[in-house]
Structures are given as C-alpha cells and as structure tokens.
Length: 513
Image (tube, rainbow, N blue to C red; front, side, top):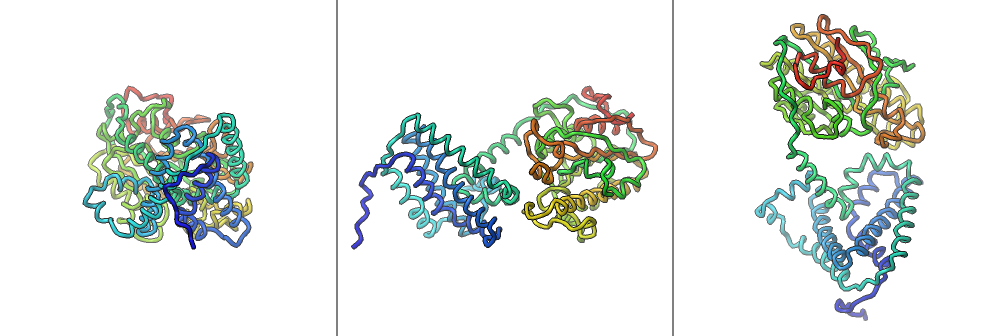
C-alpha cells in the first residue's frame, strides 16, 4: 500500500544538495520542448550529436544549480519565494509553448506585456489550471516545505569556484558545437526555463528604453546647392577584405567591380566585431560613446530624402519615413532574386525618381556574408568556387569547403555592388556615389575561431580588416588617396558629396577632394 504524502512535514536538505535537486526537477518538468527541438535539429546517431545532448544536459543542471545556489545563499527566504515564482511562471510558459507553439522571445514578451485583460482571459482553460497545479503549485509547496541547511562562507566560495571552473571547461570542450548553438540560439533561448522569459523581459524593456531615449541632436545643417545628388551607403555583413580580389586575393572574387571605372578600395579596420556597435560607428560622426544623432536621422531632419532598406538588423533607432525591412520589400518583389539581398535593389531606382527632393541618401543594410550558413546567402549561379560547405556545423567541413562557400558570398556581393552602380548610372541627371563598408570581418577557422564577436582588444585581423569601396559618377567628385580610413569617414564623406554644410563636418574625414 502506498504511503500518503504528508505535505505538512518539513524536510531538511543541505543547500548544495537542494539546488542540484531543484535544478534536476526544473530540467525534467519544463524542458521537454527544449529537448524535442535539440533532437530534431541534430544528428543524435552521431558521436558529436550524443555528446552535444549530454553536454547541454550537464550544462543546464549545473548552471541553473549555480544560479539557484548563489540566490538562495544571499537571499535566503526571499530566494525560495523567487524559486516559487519561477516554477509557477514555468508552468504557464510550458502550457503556452506546448498548446500554441509560441516562442518566448523579446517580441512575445512585448505581446504579453501589452495584452489587456479581455485578451488574456480568453486563454483561460481547464488545461491551463491543470498545468498550473501539477507543474507549478505542487513543486512550489515542496520547495517551501523544505528547510535548507546553509553552508559556511568558505564552503560557499569553494563550491561556486569549482562549479565555474567545471562549466568553463565544459564550454571549452564543446568549442566545435558553438556554431550550432549560435545558429539556434534564438530558439534554444526561448525554450530554456526560467531564463527565456527572464532574459527576454529585460531585453524588451532595454529595447523600449533605447527607443524612448532621446538622441543628442547635432547642429542644424544647410544645403550649399540644390543639384540633384544621390549618395548610397551599403553596409556589408561579415565581409573581410582579405577575400576581395580588389585587395589582392588570389581568387577572382570581384570580376565585375575590377572592370568598373572609378572604383577605389581603401584599407580600413572595423570599430567593433559585432553588428550593433559597428553599424553605429558607420552612422555616427565620431566615436563618443554617447547617442548622438545618426546620419540618416540627421539628414532626414534637415530636409533631405532618406531611404533605408534592410535585410539585417542591429542598427540604432532610425527615425525616417522610408524605413523598409525585407518583409516590406517582398510585397513589391517577384522572382528568385527576392530570396536574396538583391531584393534591396528591387524598385530602388523608381523610388528615387519618385522623390520630390533633389538630395537623396540611400542606406542598404545587407546580410550577404552572414554565417554560418554561407551557402544559403547567394543564388546557385554564384556557386563559383567548389566544393562548398553546405552545413551550419562548420566543423564537419574542410577549410577549403568553408572558404569556398564564403568566397561565393563575396562574388555575390561584387554582383550586387556592380548592379547598383549600373542602376545609378542610369540616373544620369543625378551626381551619384556609392560607399560600401562592412560592419566587421569574419574568422573562417583561423586559430580555431569562427565567425566574429571576439573582444576588440584580442580580436584577430580577420575580424577587423574590412573592405571600404567607393565609386563616384563621372563629373561629380574626385577621391583622395588615403592609405587608411575608418568607418567614421562615411558620415563626413556623405555630407561632403551631398553638399551639406554643417558645423560638425570635418573636411579631413571626407574621402572626396
């Protein structure tokens, strides 16, 4: 006969045993969708797949246990109530994930926080109550009924230190799986409890704070003339200069630009190794660490036509009328090109001609060389260099296959830029220029590093050396012969080309004579 469970009985448990137990319960009760996603997206029959699943399990148990351990040691009773809150929130989250297939990301948190009572009450059901009681209330009672035996400070420090060393060692041992985790980070992060809603709630409010934060306005500008002029700034993604034949690369990755007149390539280094900071550098007038008005906002506020088209993300808040994401452009685009960055050029000439302004700035934010799925970033006809790496698990590819796939993205970039230049040439009543600069570079296995994001102080040259390519139409402006330039040259070069007079304009930072 089964013994009746007595929930009134207080149980004793040492803190370090308790947090491991709670972490295990957290894993078992709330991570079935997580494991379902992992198993669906990795080869569990391979040794690497088995090791990945085991490593993720160990990581989840000990990382959660570490956080719970620190919280319960420092906060005591309050820490237990926070755990109770987490478990009840987990229960509700798992209900919506399994029932509606929701993804708990920043956008979903925004939807939840902006839902009114009438909308939220419509989700109430008996099944939700069952989930809440079985997965939330009952575990919470057991947490509250357990009396925790605290550890001494010295033992606390030893436990935390050893766990950190173990977790870092585990992360290092799984270096070959980092790219897999990076590729699926959004989905994985949305399924890890309780951190999916905790982290994304902070992300949501940070984003709202950034949106509401007032940019520091720059001094007003005026126009020196009213000549028809267009400046196009193309922001590249993860393009490194050493793979451009314009910079001496032995493979011909720039067959079109190398045959185009008035194209000049400058040596340049990125200001950061990740998109958000690097794009900010491209758009700001100088490095200040403050949120000054960025180039498109500044010119739009001063009466110029500004068009922003993007297949990427990570830019500072852009406050203009014509801000178009890929989804907006897809409605106006037909054909195979709409799947790739060529969509950014679709209907652009017509949009420029429809403007009532004589001064136009166009910003195209591409994603052409974004990893790890380089092979998916270009149409099949640009699969010039073979064999190519056709998996996001880059450790399965040879160095040659990986570089070939990446080089094909550069060939496609060459095509996009050459096509853009031809489009601008058709606007013969305008003086026009194109400035192409990448946000940062990319590691392709050198020193066992992949992609980007290494701290700037120790970043390898592959992640820092970027292409900076400029073209100007006949009869417009001549280029200087600077040996080295920075991303901050973009701001002042655009002001110069568009004949914008401003107190913050720095003639030495312009690339035009």
